[in-house]
Amino acid sequence: MKKIALLGHGVVGSGVMEILERNSALLERQAGEQVEAKYILDRRDFSALPYGDRFTTSFDAIREDPEVAVVVEALGGVEPAYGWARASLLAGKSFVTSNKELVAAKGDELLALAAEKGVHFLFEASVGGGIPVLQPLRESLTANHITGIAGILNGTTNFILTRMFQEGMAFADALALAQELGYAEQDPTADVGGFDACRKICILASIAFGSRFDPEKVPTRGITAISARDVACAARWGGAIKLIGRAGRAPDGRVDLEVAPMLVPNDCLLAGVGGVYNAVQVTGDMVGNTLFYGPGAGKLPTASAVVGDVVTALTQPANSRPVPWGPEKPELLRPQEESPARALLRVAGMDRQDLTAFFPDCQLLEPAEEGEEALVTAPSTQGELDAAQSAAEAAGARVLSRITVLEEMGARA
Ligand code: HSE
Image (cartoon, rainbow, N blue to C red):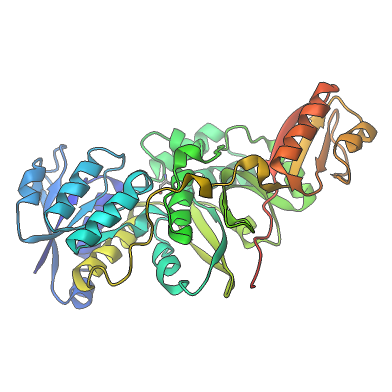
């Protein structure tokens, strides 16, 4: 019998228990022995559950128990998860987590510590919920220089955008439903503000480019300012608005990183990803474009990725590959004003002729809405676009919205 301990019995933690129970025979075959959660750490009273006798409030009991080979964390937040991750690894136990905040903040340090102690630090569930994407990125695509990653990385916001614009649901109702279904973070600001997607694109970029990217330094915008008019303009142009996390390698080797609602052309597969589904497009210099798609949040999908990591930790040797990323190299992040950009603008207070003077070679959308114009700018840089927008505003234009177009990320070399 292989014993694990579970920290947190919320949405994901209870999903882990359900999978251990429902798929116990399968997991026994996969792991070579039965897998059982010996401890579940949670302050709340779950004594009425069939496994109610396994609950504890003592992390020390877990750390000191030599039978526990893997500690699974499904709490969220950096503390106390970070302290418990360190203590578990130092005690020679593998650590599996779904906690993107922890991985984005402390991943390099915990990966190094796990390597030093000869155990695993695994976090497949931290990005894309149930989608296998981190392990394929780290292992199956290892023959490639990654040139770009673009993903719909937050199930809650994709669920909200889909419900709002396919069914006309109000933002607050769609958010409440996402919370009820267990998709949203405890504080949904992390979802709608783009911070959750930011942590996830930083984890992906860290694996793809080999060093830590700090979420605090990544330009991040959420979905709260998106209006029905923006969506109508996007549709008229031939695209959809999606909250995208994007990481691209510039020709000089620096990396562009950004999270924002973007205009995704309909011929990009990401445009059709609806509901709580996530999708991550990874482009490699040898393979070209690949797409990873599946449920990005929710109890059983996320727990599926966690339990997959548990079986890996129980069956595979640690340190079979070098640590995937090291400490931050701040010079690797290209300032946003230098990164290429094309954008959909909705503008009031300026006629077409004057607008084209500020945004030469732009594409004006037909028909114009009452009192405003919509245009898609010619390719330039974010900095040039900022300057053109400021000049137009100084001449009386009111920019009602500006949404970057998601560009194709380069194909095979
Ligand atoms: N709140 C997150 C989401 C959960 O909606 O995607 C999965 O990370």
